[in-house]
Amino acid sequence: MADTVVVVGVTRANEELRPRDIKQMFGRAGRQHGKPEADAYLVLPENARVPWSNALTSASSFEVRSRLGDEISFMFHFVSQVVSGAVTDQTSFDAWYGRTLDFCQRKTRNEKLTTYEEAAISLHQTSCADYNQQTKKIKPKPLGRVCARYYFSPLDVRDWFVNLSRLHNKSLLKNDTCQEWMIATITSAVNWESEDIKRCASPYQETVSDAGLYCRAGTSTRFLSVHHAMTGTRPNCELPELGAVRADLPRSLSAIGAICRCARNMWGDMTWLTEALELRFKYNVNMCLTNLVKMKGIGKSAARELYDKFEIENEVGLRNKLDDIKKRASPSTKRGVTRFLNGEEDIMIILDEKTAGTRPADESSPVLNIFSPINL
Image (tube, rainbow, N blue to C red; front, side, top):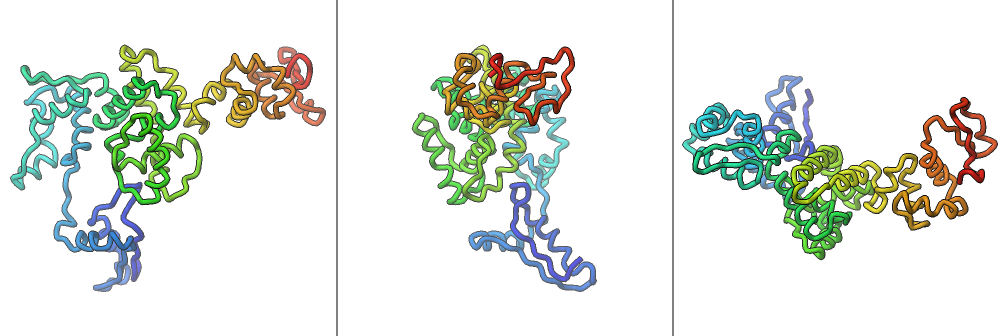
């Protein structure tokens, strides 16, 4: 392919590559010309040079290992087997686990095998399954079905449930930063962090700490990413995980909504929270504006003006201050309010003489003038 190959960094999709992946890239050097040797360079931070030098020269760098050896990965696959009914007891567990690469590798190397009882107890402790130690039977619970439906680890779903419980008990469900903490502080969030990320995340972590919430070590990257994804602001530091977090937030919010429905007997109807979280992410607004942006015709800018300038938080406040809005609001906000009040469907709004007549109106579509006495 080329006489020289340069590989910049050792991460892809925010995950660290394996040494054998880097070697596979290096293998393209000199291939086209059939030379016995070629140059390959790996660009790394100075503090990563020695570890990666050792990893690339190790004889095990081409070794393929099953990811079931990782607790998060094992629990993720195990809960789906329990929910589907494929694993219900020792016999069915052996039938499933005995076919996995992890089982074969551990047995070949005389390593300790994962036992059914250990796996069942661990899943039981996440409240995603119910394990009866007398009958040795395991069956799924509502949180386990959330895991299987939305493809999340039981450890993460458990963390979301615990986080929501803490916010509910402390009456912090409407706090913007605490909501971001709830979404971000999960087991799989533990990741590499730079000093810049820690510095930028510190104010938000201090806010939740002052509220009596614990910030798990290693979650600064995800916490900061969730904050910027929810608010639509730009980070002041390099934040490689932001894109992945933003892309995955709709699925995360759906899972959180399902958890709220599972716990409605404990917390009551939490539909308002899940709707607010989705509106915050969609419009990049704070909690105080969610009741405004969900009104048809009111966008982010209009909602901000109504809240800041007129101290309006909901539809009732808006209707009580129509006269004031007519006098002092910007044209775009007046236009948005008029669309909301009149349903905006099949209605021609005449803003001025220049825009009048740009859209024909039929007999069923009244022509409204935003500056006329009958409107704003």
